Image 1 (cartoon, rainbow, N blue to C red):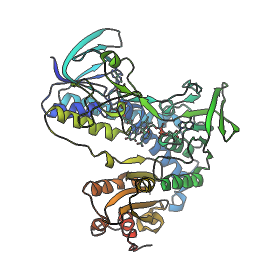
Image 2 (tube, protein in one colour; image 1 turned 90 degrees about the vertical axis):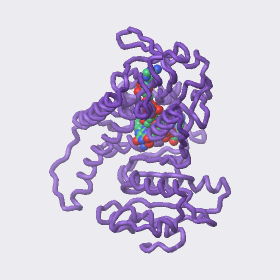
Image 3 (spheres, protein in one colour; image 1 turned 90 degrees about the horizontal axis):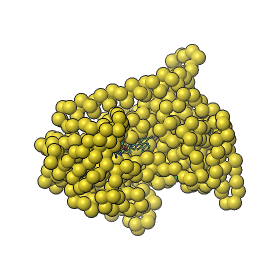
Image 4 (cartoon, rainbow, N blue to C red; image 1 turned 120 degrees about the vertical axis):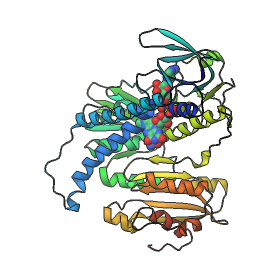
Length: 465
Ligand code: FAD
Ligand code: NAI
């Protein structure tokens, strides 16, 4: 065999697995069909969306909050071309970083479509149509996901678009209709609402980010209404979408009533599905369940023992950090170690402003499981640091076991929640109680105090409410 390990796909699952395996002494090859490494996350996902979120937030603040801080500005204008150019520069910097890491760890990179020939051989078809076969003792499938599309929504990538096109628009939509008020809808909706688009959400469920703790969706809707006054059509099922040239028509139904919406762009973000086109995984006999590769829960092996699968292509949350953790796990298993992932404590973050973050069980799940719990909430409006910065929207909600005081779930919406959640994840990993957090010193004035106060609130001992 040429390599100990070959990895198909260079997203946060694949490239992290490659580095960890190389650290553990394996000879490693990574195969990527695009010319740049980093996968969805770096090229058309996490990083570009956060770059545009940050740019649009600067504009929004300059327009709406600078004056309050005593900062005078002149007429403000968005240069969408520069915003997108900066986003591309950000991607390039991180692409260069991954290339450097591949070289540093002596990982061989192949650019081309990987396809199984047999359980140890991968054919690589390059862009110039030349082919090369490589062999490896073990193989990891890390081919990721792509947007879900529906047969009656003709995504033309011009006016009816997915997140990929929404990250590279050449003009600011005047009226952006967003089908799906989940994570992508909330994040990319925020980007365009902040820079002037009128936003309309059409959502199947009864709230935004409906799979998170219900309080989060409610509070996010409230702040969105306050900041951007979007139109919300909840409990609505889209039945038809049509591009009429410069106008898009969306037809949706709710309880027998039909609404017709008009916009210049329609963003379709109704979920993502695993991607295995061209891989010949079925041909090799790899088992699938509803499009996802079936794996052994403990080892991530497919039904062919030397072939593993990780990230968006398998069950579980479609998140970059989850894919990376699975990449590390498989590299360590191949090296004979016994690693473990605590899936119950994978945090979930929505990078709106205020940010939303959560870990552990929601209140709805606790009720469903019949676990007796206490709730402690602390609003950011009562936090000195938040008042000083003017970011008083949101709250932290802590759910703990009524009998033992163990923290079972933490749900927050507020400034810096994306970073604050890390304390909750660590605390829960060590099975901390609310009292453990209460007895831990938190610097003043910081946002972290809100978590401690929310823990106090579970016992009605919060100081500042
Ligand atoms: P991917 O990143 O999808 O990588 C798979 C790679 O495999 C791709 O580069 C693909 O070209 C390649 N490939 C596929 N088939 C082949 C083949 N046959 N041969 C060779 N190469 C192949 N997650 C977060 O945790 N935080 C976020 O903030 C976040 N933001 C997001 C924003 C958007 C707009 C989107 C769309 C997603 C976001 N995600 C976020 C989700 C995150 O991007 C994915 O969960 C993550 O990229 C999955 O990693 P992966 O390694 O499984 O697959
Ligand atoms: P999502 O699952 O978050 O939201 C999709 C929404 O579309 C749901 O609320 C669903 O009810 C709705 N929907 C489905 N079909 C519909 C229909 N026919 N009509 C109207 N509404 C419909 O999926 P989304 O936003 O597309 O994101 C895909 C995935 O990408 C996420 O699940 C997440 O894993 C990942 N992601 C993560 C981010 C982060 O971690 N910050 C950011 C962006 C994406």
